[in-house]
Image 1 (cartoon, rainbow, N blue to C red):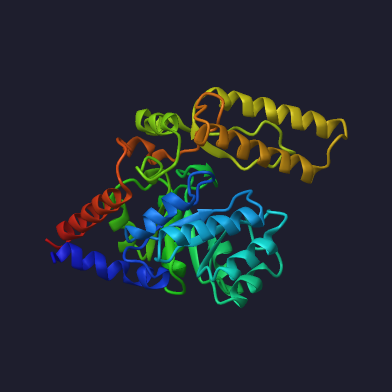
Image 2: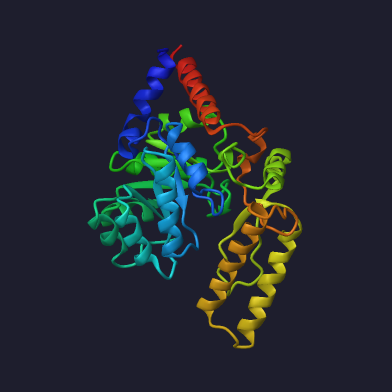
Length: 339
């Protein structure tokens, strides 16, 4: 083992122990993409796959977890969205299958959800987009955090990964394992965040074009062709509609979303819908638009959610090769630092 590999193993030890994996790389939960095939492939390659529950019903999640278990004997997690109307039923499904790690995304855990997840012995991972929130989550009993910068794909916050890492890691990394996400495409960046105190990292965009990913060939082609500047954040057109920006590749659907927001805002004006219903309509729009692109291959009118690291995705290759490359790059970077 080289000095670099030894250093990398030492720095990832805490994250690996927490996840039960060989390398401390979480698969980012991407709706329609992070399903049984990709999740099992990431876990089988030594990483930690995470099922994107998204808008799934409890019955669908039940089948997806069972399907993943049929493909891997390694640990994997499930990502649940806090605003899902059947959140507690989904937590029960995870418990039924003895899922060891649950990731809660999309805001503060609703009352009772944290206790429900931990009651079954599962470890709870939450997203912390700000230092105050990170501290609050740790006080409430969260087992680990993901800090995700605006370079990520899908729903994003306003602060970059490098700034969040500098602000949050020194303050809380000693208390709980912290995984850094958003814009990570090479091992050198992984080494840098581990040096800053991260227990590991989370990558989504880098795995979309894995051979094991079921994303449509058109979807993968769009990723391989794209550069970092093609992954743009959606624009909010009405202050009353608290639309969380979404990062995706520019296409005709970018304009369609602006039109959808206008339509929902007009319905609000006319008193035809309540605010909660308006927000749900926006969420459902994204779920449908993403499915059109990922599953049906409609890359013009579907949503091509991608992080800015998309420019580093250059070919379709097996998950094991992606992870091996990242680990070699990280070890080499740590080796150079030892010189």
